[in-house]
Length: 169
Image 1 (cartoon, rainbow, N blue to C red):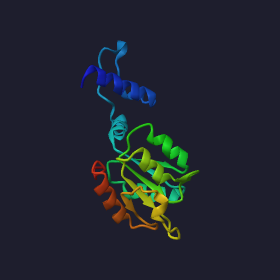
Image 2: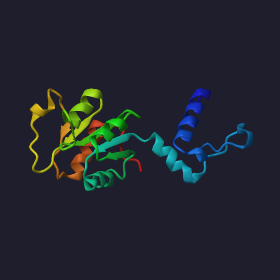
Image 3: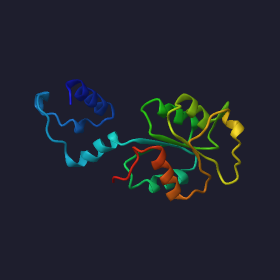
């Protein structure tokens, strides 16, 4: 790894409050091996990110449990504006967005697809919500999966849309 890459990693670790991961010796001239308890934090930093924008904590937890054996970090939001803010920070592998997540001018999922056209988006309408394609204003979602959903089917769809998210834990 080049010097610039190491500096970038160090800045990111400091910014995330993970300075123990740096393991620098006195004077900062040599690096020690990373302690075992911090190894999983480093792996989490490299894992692909999954955005779950749903106001139901139960749905967020079900998705987290369904993907518990997968190499992925889930970032969950309950507010539409928070979802847009998180997407600006780091690239995500996939977004799962509840149909009821709305902005002033329409569906959150539509806005995400417009701003990030290469990001796979799964729209999740609820049992009693009828998704009208005209609300998408010409935007096509990568999948529409109705709640309640079959966890195995959702996981298969996620794996198909985001190959970086794979079993590995």
